[in-house]
Each structure stands twice: as C-alpha cells, then as structure tokens.
Image (tube, rainbow, N blue to C red; front, side, top):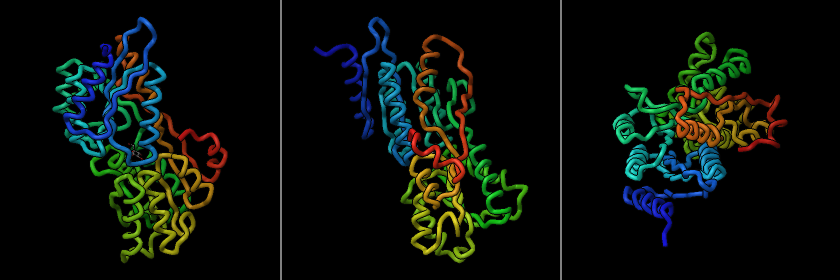
Length: 326
Ligand code: AHR
C-alpha cells in the first residue's frame, strides 16, 4: 500500500508532468521519527553552467542530509517553466517554495498566488523586481554589484589603467547580468583609460561565450582588444578557446577576468589562460534549509542574506585548487 508521503510524491510528480516540465523529480529522505517532514519546492533555472550544477547538487544533498522532502523542478532556462513549477508547488501545498528567478521581472502575479495560498517564498541566488517586498521572505545570495566592482578593480590595476575591454554578459534581464554590468561600469567610472568597446550576451554558457568572442575578434575592433570581462567562468572558458584559435595568448595578449570561481577556472588560472575570478558561492543548500527551518519554527528571518566571496588570481589560486569544493 502507498504511504501518505509516497502518495504526496506521486501527486507532485503528476502535477509537474502535467505542466510539461522535463527533468522534474521528487525526492524524499526519511526524517527523524516523530518529526513532521518539511516539503520544499525548488524551481531551478536549469543547468547552464558549472556554477548552476554545483548549486543543484548543494540543494539536493543538503535536503537529503536534513530529511527534507524536496520537490525539484528543472525549468530548462525558461521563465514560463519556473512559473508553471511554482503553480504546481502551490497546488501540491508544499511548506516553502524556493526560487532562483531566471530573470528579474514577471514573477509578481505567481508570487501573489503563493502568498494567497499562505506559502512562504525564499529567493535563492537571484533577486526579483516586485512592488511588494512581502511577496518573499528573504533573498539569499551574493552581492552581484560588488562582484562587478571587484572585477573592475582587478582589471584597472592589472592593466595599469589602460585597456580596451570586451564584455560577455549573462542571460539578458537576469539579476547577475544587470548587476555585474552595473558594478563593473561603476568600478571603471574613475578610470577613463579602461573602456568597454563591445558588450554582448553569452547567455552564461561556454558555447555561446566562445561564439560571441570569436565574433568580437573577427570584428573591425578585434585587433585592439586587450581585455575580456565575462559575467561567469563558463563564458570566459569558452572565450579563452576562441582567443587561442585566433592565434592569441589568453591571459597575456588579452587579460581575462570573470566571476564564479569554479574548479575549471582555477585550473585555467594555474595554467595562465585566465587571470582572475571573483568568487560567487553556489553552495546555497545549507543557507536555504537553515532559513526553511527558521521559518518553520516561526522565527523572523532577515530580508537579505549575503554570501561571502573572495577574489582569486595567480597569487592564491594554486593553493586553493586542491580543496576547491566545486
Ligand atoms: O546567478 C548566478 C549565475 O548563474 C552564475 O554566475 C552563473 O554561472 C549562473 O549560470
């Protein structure tokens, strides 16, 4: 006979299948005896980068370790799929909904539906733009503007205040793409010798980063490029390939600075093709489920939880690499 929890899992799977979400799964680790199992719906963006995959792994493993019943949906990069997943979580009656919004705008109506159903929403990794801040409990994630400033600070110093920069932006309309651009431009404001000569989205993926960098290099401005700023490591790593294929030395002919701090970026720094990565911690599982447990205990949770970050270059990357967790 099917237990109550297995039945709930089956219902969740049916709901998610009904809204056409591929990759959705329902996992449940048994909680301690006598303790009510907490159900959390997590509407992940997709698997566009190494960062995102590490983030998913952190959410899944931490839920398992705490005996939390995680209903995980993979929105495959589409906002409409995230919205459908949230509606499915509401229909299922999860205890908490967690969401890294793929873009900043357009979530207000569905967040209102969650509020009306009395389900608290926790934003992880990315922010949303809403008229009513009460639509979510808290936002856990990095300070993306500061990451952009740190990348600019490094580049100004490394280039001696003179560089022609191409920029690979993240997903258009996403919080990290908007804020990392803003922070970088703020960081360059007092340094007129460092200018952005081209800027385009590489959609946070290696393949697109490579394709756009190839086009930058082939453009009339190509020969004058002396630096690349990528909003994530995956795009930088793709672009590094394009630079090599164009017969130039990444890290030497073209300085490369990016954001995330994933293991392949550390390897590239050690090998000399990447110069700097600004860390953005994807291991948000412990942060998220601490908050979920606090919500369940009825505690007041602070509106913003900022995850700490460090900057890595050839000075410190080799020492960090062996213990790098993602
Ligand atoms: O929102 C965080 C960003 O999303 C990471 O920097 C990027 O790699 C990911 O896809």
